[in-house]
Image (cartoon, rainbow, N blue to C red; front, side, top):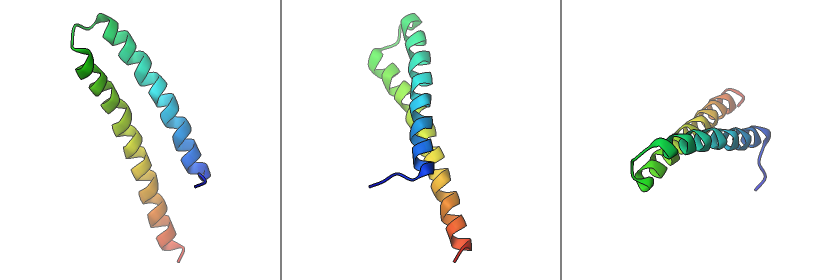
Length: 70
């Protein structure tokens, strides 16, 4: 499977977003007294939900665009 340009852009964006979320989570975790599993789950949710939402939005826009080109 080959990624097209938009998918490559999405991979780059979620990689950068992962760095942002990880650095903020690391900074907050050092000052937090919450459980590490719960904190890790929240950090994962802060990363994966926007990543999937952006991918779904891009897929939906592409689907609509392809519909107008038929």
